[in-house]
Image 1: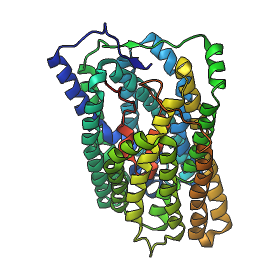
Image 2: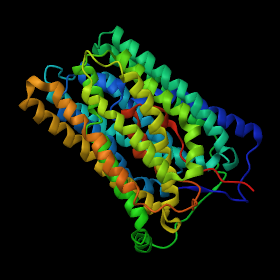
Image 3: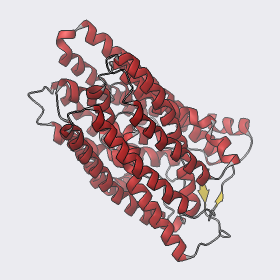
Image 4: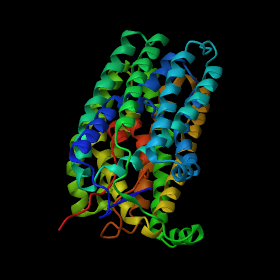
Length: 467
């Protein structure tokens, strides 16, 4: 479902193209809040699960795993939908289903058994699975759709400006949501109000999606050979297989206890949602400001060394979390900002390295293998982390702070293993294809955990060089 340039493609009149680009930007501005709320654990969802419904840790871990499970399952559905329907129709349909699911949640919250957190968690998990599956299918189709009609010559400039504007939308959402939840003292009606406002905005964005052009301007690339041939091509790429192994270790490390950083801040440190939103904004700001510099470093020195450096610089300071207490958390704002800066380089390098390693004769299958394996590992990790945390808190109930500290040491330690695997990947000198659709869904899904919320709206591709 990737797009390639076609000299015989249909050229849209400038006025129509300008209107389509404007509608795409307007769509993103009003869709961003609900898209951000759909991440496995963001400020809003973490506050709902901990302060609103007081769900058990294993239930929170299971709910956090569902978007990754849906990233895995969509691989079996997206190709079939792509054969039968146009990307725009798929995008609109599943965007409607996703927005409707949140409207249903706003009503469902009034009937959840708040006096029985386990039962409330089961109902919420069922809802979140269907909502996440619709979001996953919509996300992949949307990427395919915009690459169909946005000319390749404009993508770099256009999406750079668009994502910059969407960052302001993210900041406005985080600040307003944190203030609203704090002012409403986490009553269920405040969660319903936030859902209601952002769902209405999402329906407005869907209307603008429908008003954008339908005719594709570029042809779709066709894979070479049958399934068995492509599978053998993937097997014969040891560097790509090592990259998948590295990605799996990193996905496990990031998701094992990554979900519970927000839970720790809400339950143990008793921070307000406004304060947690402020930290998340700092992470997003650090990443957005540093992204151009990381692009230059990656182009000059290669992905592997820059990624290893940024990963270690990002994760080693996270040992500070093992020292944080309700009385001593003055370093957290700096830690979030620094993590956003360093994490942006790692995530961007992860994508550009994938561009170099995926075999062009079997790129769709290779991307599917990478997404399936990393998503499956990412889905298992928070379930296991929630079970470990529940067991440890029951065993050492009087030392819950130290239990969290011990768990938080796992992420930087496992990141060292991921960095060691990364250094064993052979990096070619040049990229071998120019466009990937849906390849980074796991990165988007995990971005909210570490404050890199601007990556939710980042359209990953590598612009073609001229001359």
